[in-house]
Amino acid sequence: MAMATVAPRGLRLIERLAGLTPSGRAGVPVAWALYDFANTIYSYAIVSFAMGLWVTSDSRLGPADGQFYFGLANAASVGLNALVSPVLGAISDRGGRRLPYLLFFTALTIAATAAIGLIAGGTGSAVTLIGLVLFTIANFAYQAALIYYDATLPVVSKPESRGRVSGIGVAVGYLGTIVIALLILLTHSEDGPLTFLMAALLFALFAAPIFLVVREPRGGDYRFRVGDVVASWSQLRTTLEDAKAVPGLRRFLVSRFFYTDPVNTVIVVMAVFATDAIGFTKTEANLVLLALTVAAVVASFGWGLLVERIGPKRTLMIVLASWCVGLVIGGAVLSKPTFLLAGILLGSGLGGVWTSDRVFMLRLSPPDKIGEFFGLYGLAGKFSAVTGPVLYGATVSTLLNAGWGAGAYQVGIFSFLILMVIGVALLRGVPDRRTEGPSAADLPPTAMPVDEPFVEGRA
Image 1 (tube, rainbow, N blue to C red):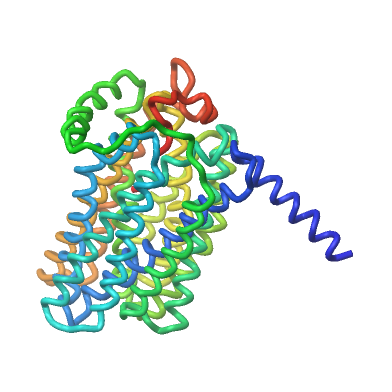
Image 2 (cartoon, rainbow, N blue to C red):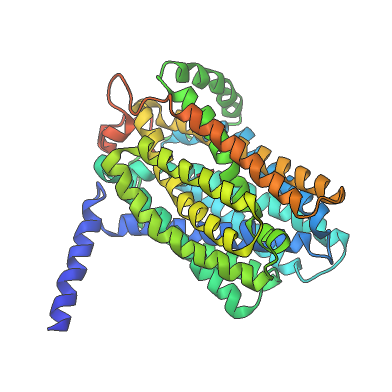
């Protein structure tokens, strides 16, 4: 009886997954979500945890200088990506394929991360410098891959199921965080070589299914030419002009710059903040961040359903309001209880930001310009990821050197709150959907123009 009950439930799950995608194949959304699982392993293990601790350790640059140079390396990687993302997006638009580009940048991320692991046990300023350079390369490639990954959402989901598929991807991604956090805990590797090597191996393993299972609509016979780089840059001005014709789009992109600035920076500095400002040990910090990730996993499924019920804009407004409350709590008193309370609000809201705002972008975009406008969407997030860590690192480093102690971290947290409030204020004026004609979110992939492919890649 038990086996008979389990089998129909399994079949129903497969049918539900198959019903989410135009291909009718349950493996497609699963493979797509596993890539989120894979790249979140890198994001947590390297960006949020090991690299910052490695650079700011007393045997390397120390807390003050380490936070500044780590923020600088992160900003350099994202800034360079922001500069070339119009080219990357436009070239893939011409060819109508995203997966080959996703494969290239995924492989580059994995290789650079593994290389850090090979030198992480060494000492000296030269090793630290090489590690920062390799991190810059890895993070550049990681950010570039996201351009193509986020843009494949219309390929793997139907218009009416995009909130659920997006939410599933984010939630499964957080499961990747749980897996790597537990492995770090069990191996006691923390910021040692093993963490970097594990992250590279697991990224490769769980990224593979998207390239084996997902099939894109056939593109044209386009082949890359160097002259296309110049044409793509000139296209950026045209894209900015095109954005003027879409009501609310430019306001949304400016708003996105402000509200993703705190989000992107918190992702980078959370482990160092937990250890240096709150007083957790590295192991305790990993445990706390693991617990907060569990809350984020549960919340991501809820945010996806809420997007479909009340729409992406209203969901995003609720998410950002929870972030404002969390920042107030986290900055007012630096203690372990307030950190945990603030962390629950910020962690659960983190999944809500990515789940709702990429669907909102689809809702605002006309179908024939989705790749073009997702380039601007990526630029807004990437420029905030450049300015946020640099400003935070410079502020905290300067105030720490001036003897402010814990107060330096409080100033950094409240600067996030100001930016978040500006983002919310701007977002309120953005219309909830396109005022003329269908949006990209309203049409199935088969309704997209063949010569302006619809697929894209998160910042």
